[in-house]
Length: 62
Image 1 (cartoon, rainbow, N blue to C red):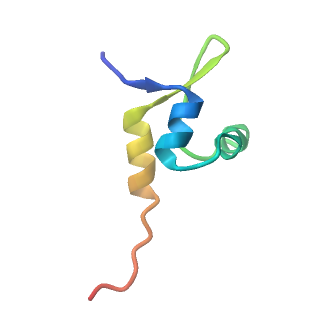
Image 2: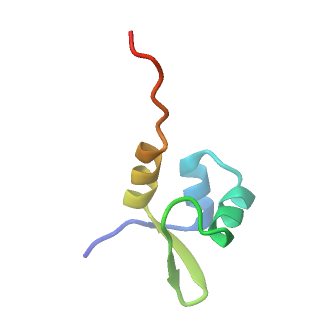
Image 3: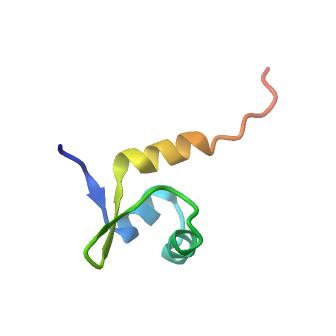
């Protein structure tokens, strides 16, 4: 199983968010799924993409 795991800093950059926001979300169990690898936190690129897709707000269509 090949995955592209991102550090919290890389994930925050991919989401366009401050690292603090991502850390806060993680403690509140919000935001994209994450992995705990020992003491380290990692995000799967696929989960970041899925989170962004689910966050789309649809507006009136023309």
